[in-house]
Length: 185
Image (cartoon, rainbow, N blue to C red; front, side, top):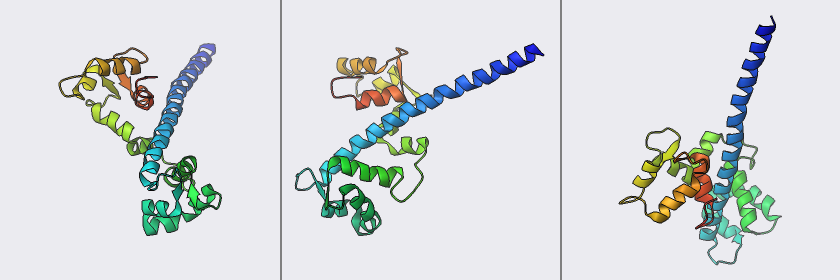
């Protein structure tokens, strides 16, 4: 009887430990996808801030979403602009987060898989993970560059490979891609 209890406890504990790690990785992955999303929003903001004043006017917002979209999202614009007629970069990121990641009209947040499919850096990882094993190996990395990787790209790969397994998982990939230029985290 005691052996049965101990074995049951061991099975439950091992299942808990196995399930805890992916959730932790999911949280890391979501945080990196959020960082990637925000970085992309800065790029979009700069492209639509036509007069380069560091503010997105309602007219510039309208040029981004068009007539139909702006009717749907005017409330979100007003919510984050404080009722004003322009958004700062941070306010624009909040608007885009509400619209595209849920919350603008009470929508449910997208799944992790949807977030991965919607992120250009994550899609790039999937493109270079040729065998679909969830890792970009050194060989797959070298194929990204015509004629193979140079010394700088090799150093970038080594800097991104935090666990030194000669491959990059998606978390390592995103950390590397989101690191400031010339500095792999």
